[in-house]
Amino acid sequence: MSLTVLIVDDSKLARIVAAKALSALQPEWQRLEAGSAAEAHDVFAKQQVDVALIDFNMADKDGLELAAELRRDHPGLPIAIITANIQDEIIAKARAINATFVPKPITKEGLEGFLSGAALSLRSKTI
Amino acid sequence: MTPDIFLDDLERDALTEIVNIGVSRAASNLRKMVGQQVLLSVPSIDVVSQKRAARLISERELPQLVAVRQDFTGAFSGRALLIFPHEKSLELVRAVTNDELSAADLIAMEHEALTETGNIILNSCLATMANMLRQSLSMTIPVVIRGDSATLFEATDATAAEAPVLFLYIDFTVRNRNISGYIAVLMTLPSLMALKELIAAFISRVLSSDG
Image (cartoon, rainbow over all chains, first blue to last red; front, top):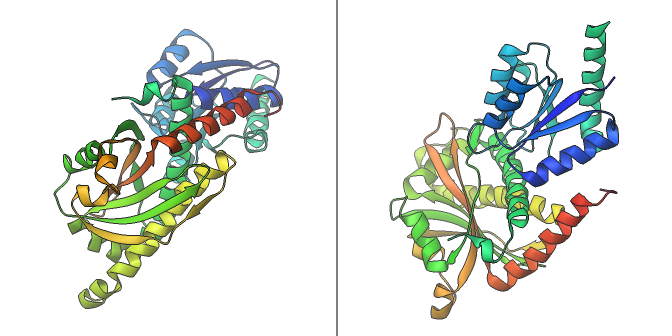
């Protein structure tokens, strides 16, 4: 099953790191990138996105706000919040909008659980 | 003024990202100490004179500041500061001691509590950055300094005040507490050049296929 993943991070380098980990774990999945929350909304407006990886600390709008907005329109979308900021409030907010926490810097190991969970939940929906 | 003559776009992006990760870890530690969420700004990175760095802080704050300062040496060297407006410093001490101290004890504990808080914040930030760059840094014992921003950023001699430095700073506030301040890092030009090489190596590791 080929899925489309959107990577949202205001750091180009962080997007490269995320894309590399993704291609190592799920080489068939299509990867898209957005450099801000606004760009992410544009991508969602234009095409189907199956999975979202969202950086927390972004300049214009933070990743949790973006995730909450996306959650309203896409109740089943697997969302990961990527951050080194492991404060309880941020973890709690991510849980409240049913997003997964992935530690930054992103590694294959850190991302693996989220991606296999996402693949599983999307597969179970299509059956 | 931007550091573009020193760092290209991707290097600047990488440095911002590394600082972001370092400061996020530091904020997570501070959160454990104060029991409230710590909110951070996105890091600002500028190459300015030491004088201008002092002015950037003084333009935004009242003259009386308290800072915990640690110098670091290694592949790159510099100075890290945790800075508060003077009137917020006791509030921070109150927060890290769980509101359990009397007013007199609070004042007695202030110096030690500030030193320890600064030590934890600055170390977690710098250690994370050093690890990402695969370097080790030695940190001096933290010292508490009081004064205006010129005192905090005081250069070793008159010519150094005009010399360009890499100036990184991040604002932070503690939710539900009247606490706000800055984490600032200053690095001189030779260190910035060393840092530029380490960032380039970091980028090529990130871009290489073996990760």
